[in-house]
Length: 229
Image (cartoon, rainbow, N blue to C red; front, side, top):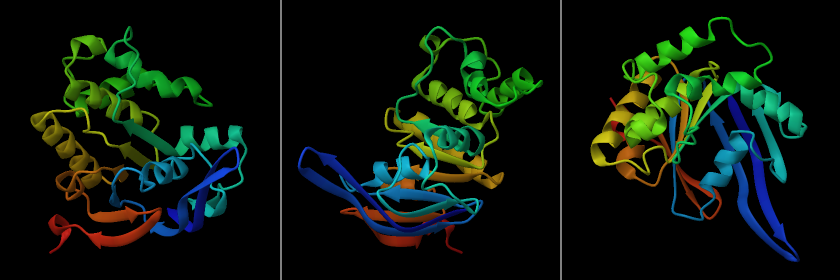
């Protein structure tokens, strides 16, 4: 599903160049659940942005579903994101005056064809994440964990090929963190491909594969303890 070869990313400010990613090679198969770990400043969020087609590398190639997306235009990258990728962030990014159903439906506004069953799909996803009785609540009426469940349902509404999660439990308490991670485990068991950025080893251990980054390079690629026979 994902193939990176020699991926580099350099940021330039005036005459100063900062090389953040340094020749990354990576393959991720369909259906994998991958945790991407590393201290602050190691490049994991930069790599996530590239994988999610939110940014472009300055070197190397990125194939997504056998398509080289490295040199696509902004419009083409936007279409790839809308059709193939779902995002879950640490900040929930919900519209405060919209209810849960309306928030879940947002990505479909940019779809090339709005599904006739869009509302039923949104309500079904909210039921799946345990919010069947909170569909018409606005974000301010929901707990942090419930808001993140809405965000996960929103990420799934366009039936993406892969789900990216950037520190999805970073703003949650222990109980909500466990509930959200249980939900990701269930989504993976249903066949969803997931790549998650996290700094927390306990969260990472819920994935089937753990990548660790240091100074813009992947220095470790291993199966998690929980995934070993």
